[in-house]
Amino acid sequence: MILGLSTPIFTLVHVVLSLVGIFSGLFVLVGMLAAKRRPGWTLLFLAAAIATSVSGFFFPSGNFGPAHIVGVLSLVALVVALVARYVSRLAGAARWIYVMAALIALYLDVFVAIAQAFQKLAFLQALAPTQSEPPFLYTQLAVLAIFVVLGIAAMVRFRPAPPQPSGAMDIRRAGA
Image 1 (spheres, one colour):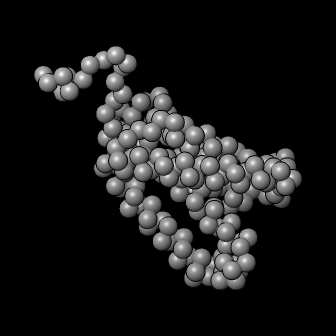
Image 2 (spheres, rainbow, N blue to C red; image 1 turned 45 degrees about the vertical axis):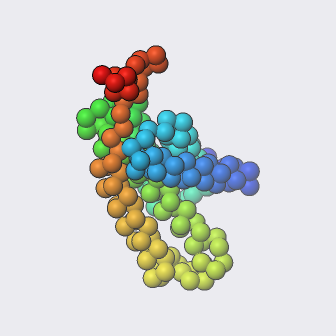
């Protein structure tokens, strides 16, 4: 146990952060597929995903388990995404590194959301009570396959033009 904050309010905050991270991450992914940066959504996604992963360590636990491993992997991916996006500014290889790191972090959040859904929702829990049954495994495998395909598409398509300085004239639009 790291700190053991398992109050209903803390749990609610953690869940809300997770949902904000997932939904904003999906907007970022759609932007990548459309070759758009979406800076506000990106910042929201990265901040919410980091807060989700960090807050996950504050739930009571007797040992370092699978949830902690996913949290560490997510934080590593998020740090890589932050560096590629904000330090390297998507230059050169940082573009595809950012795409992959951001999508790995998003996938891990979705992976955990699916696991939580199978634990907490009665109709899903009945299908896979131990999360080793085919419905759970097929769902996770399908989501992984979708993320792999979308990740490859995003790496190919996410080539956004660098932001123009304010007041700069675009010579293509000026007719030159």
